[in-house]
Amino acid sequence: MKIKAYLKPSCGWSNGVRAIFQKHQLAYEDVDIINNPTNYAEMVERSGQRLSPCVEIDGVMLADISGDEVEKYMLEKGLVKPVSAETDVPTNAPCTDEEHAKQRAKTIRFF
Image (cartoon, rainbow, N blue to C red; front, side, top):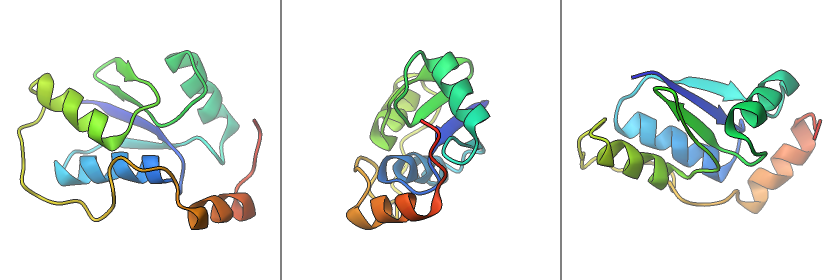
């Protein structure tokens, strides 16, 4: 399975997507859309919208998606099997106030 995930470095939604891939022990390409304007532009072009996370699995783009939604898609398509492992972060939650503050202090905004 080829997975390309357009994610923010520090974000509740993005961390939830990462947690699902870790839970299922899946290799994926983690594409930073905050610090690299080319990556963000690619995400917008490929997904047709500006919200993240976006995850492309075997050529299918899942736009503005949570970790729970990614997992549901993969289970429904038979790409993964159910596992009982727990994640160390919520898989369907927005950024915390601390994460928002960190993003404002450390990231380069280009949109």
